Amino acid sequence: MSNKNNSRNIPLPIKREVRQRCGFGCVICGFPLYEYDHMKEWSKVQEHKAEDITLLCDKHHKEVTTGLLPREKVFEANKNPYNLRKGSSSPLSLHFDDNSCEVDIGGNVFSANIKSQITEMIPLIIDGIPLVGFVLEDNQLFLNINLFDKFNNLVLQISNNELVYSTSPWDIELVGQTLTVREKARKFLIRITFEPPNKISIKKGRFLCNGVEILIDEDHMLITNNNMLVQGNFTENVQGGLIIGATSKPIGGFMRISKVNRYLGDSKKSLAWAKKMKEEFSD
Image 1 (cartoon, helix red, strand yellow):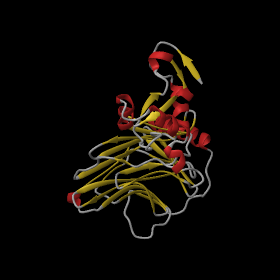
Image 2 (spheres, helix red, strand yellow):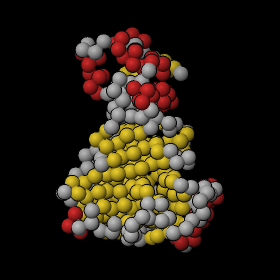
Image 3 (cartoon, rainbow, N blue to C red):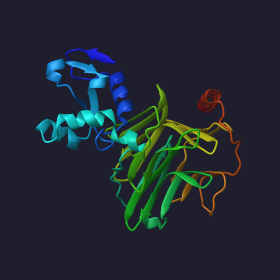
């Protein structure tokens, strides 16, 4: 794909094509924070061709610009990007560090502080697997997230503040504080906004695990397996939140669902039902 104009702004479809081809990270080191680099000097070609654009982290982009990194090395890495060779990105350290934490999932807000003496806060658990949570340990705060696809493949993981993602999704983009993972055009797997030092917000996407699907919107969570709408909940200093399935150890939460049908429901029908219920509640 190409686009010839006098603007240095790269069209969004071309950016996406470049991200996909480069494995969503610097082609040399795989780092998830990157810049779009015209391998052919922009002042000479003044056009945006996906095949002539690559991804470089700030360090390697500066080294190319100053001449410390030969352009030939970039061409070589572009042919075989780091992340595609490894199947996942290099880790990105997130800067969460406070004596309290907050998670907003679809308008359901979960908070905790170290003074409460709980060591972890897990707003969403399926079959004992923590999908989203914070660990409060030794006056430090650690974010943990496990994101699966519908085949139970782990596509994104944040372990103790270190973010690593697979190259298998259709598109992954980290812009500012917001990480977006798309399954296909206009279909979000997740959109997470990081708000260091102690908060994250998830207002769009879906969590999948062991045949359970939870859709996330601005103001609700929807379990499509049983058409259960979860909205407007606030918890403080509670270890668990929404708990689905069995857990290996006792854990408190605001809602526990021991049994749920283990198949993915019809998302369109569930969303239509949720919209109807919300309209009835607002009347």
